[in-house]
Length: 499
Image (cartoon, rainbow, N blue to C red; front, side):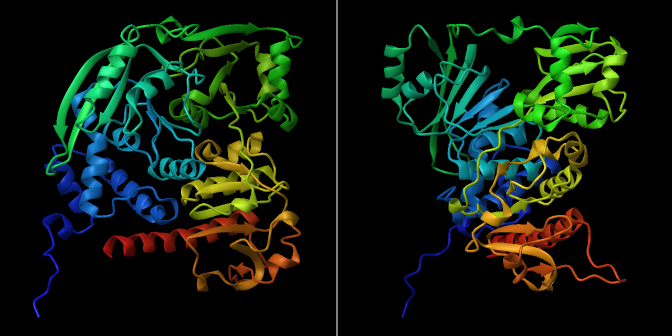
C-alpha cells in the first residue's frame, strides 16, 4: 500500500547542529563571530532543555526556531541604530533581547518579565552565556516604573496604544518604542495617531519578511516627543557626585562603616565590594547596582565607563583604612543588595539544579555560589541557617558570582518537606556516580560539622574518598556534585539535539 506520509521539507530535513545554525543565520544576512555563534547555540540548547517544563515556545522544528525566533529577533539590529539601555518589554524566554545582545554586544539590555519561572530561566541564560550589561527586571512594567531607558522593544501581541501608555514613566524624551508586529496593524497605528499625537511621532513603518520564509513582519517605530515629569535626562546628570569626608563623626561615614556588618547590610540594602578585579567587573557588568565609589585619593576617581550619576566619596586616608579591613588599598564599591524573594517549598523546583545552601561560614557560601554559577545551576536557595551572601567574605570568595545568579531565601533544614525531589549529599551515602539526576531537583549538602538531619542521610549520595580522608570541605564536595550533574545535563542536551 502506498504511504500517505508527506515527504519531508527542506526545513524539516535540517540537522540540529551548530554548523547548520551558522549556515541558516548567514544565509539570512547575519554574520556572527565564533563567540557569538557559540552563545546563540548555548541559548538554543537551554531553550530546548527547559521548554517542556516552562512552555517557552510552541516552535519545535530546529530550522524554524533559528529563523522565526533567533533571526527574527536580530533583524531590527540591521534596520535600526539601537540605543542603550534597551528595555525588552514582555521578553518571555528572552526574545528579542538575548539574540539582540548577542549580535550587538555593546548594547545594554533590560529583560522585563513578570512570570517568576521565566525570570529564573533568564537568569540561568545570562549566567551560562556570560553576557555583561544585561539586567533581568522581574516585574511587570507600568507607568509607575520610573527607571529611565533610551528605547523599548517588544514582540508581544499587546495593542500598541496600551504599550505606549505602559512605558510613559520610563522612556526618555527622544526615546524609541520599537514594535515587531505582524503585517496587519494599520488600525493600531491609526489609534495611536488619534490618542498620542502630542506625545509620540511615527518615525518608521517598514514591511519585511523573515528570510527564506513566507512569514511577513512589520517594524513600527515611534519617537517620544514629551518629557517625563520629574525625570532628568542622562545628559543633565553629572558624571559623578563628589563628597569629601574628613571626620569620623560624619553621618555618611558612619553609615558606610555599618556596611562592615551583616546587620548594616540588611538594614541599608547595600554592601561593599573590595578588590580591583571584582570592583572593575561590577562597574562594567552591573552598572545599575553600583551606587557609590569610595576612595582615599583624588587620583583614584571612578572609571570612565562607570554609571552616570555614581556618587564618589573621597575619604581621608585614615577613614578609608577603617572601611578596608582586608587591606586591598584599592577603591571600594558600594552596590545595592538585590532583594531575595522568598522560596515556598509548595512551589517546588524550577527545571535544572536548585542548590539548597545551609552553610554558616560566609566563605563557604561565597565559594559554593561561585561553583553554582560556573556550572549552570538554575537558582540558589539559601536556607535560614546560611550566612548572608553579601557578607564581605562571601562576596570575596564568590569572585562576584553573587551578582550573577538568582538567589532566593528558603526555610530551615528542619522545615524542608521530605516529598520534594531532593538529592542530599552526605558521607556514607551511595556513590554519586551511580545516580541519574532528574530534570528538576534540589541538591542539599550538609552543614559544616554536623552534616544533615537523619531523614536526609537515609537516601543520601556521597563522593567516594581514599587515603583515610573522611570527608571533603562542604563547599568542595558540593562543587564536585555540581560538576557530575553538569556533565549529565550536557550529555542530555546533546541527545535532545540529535533526536
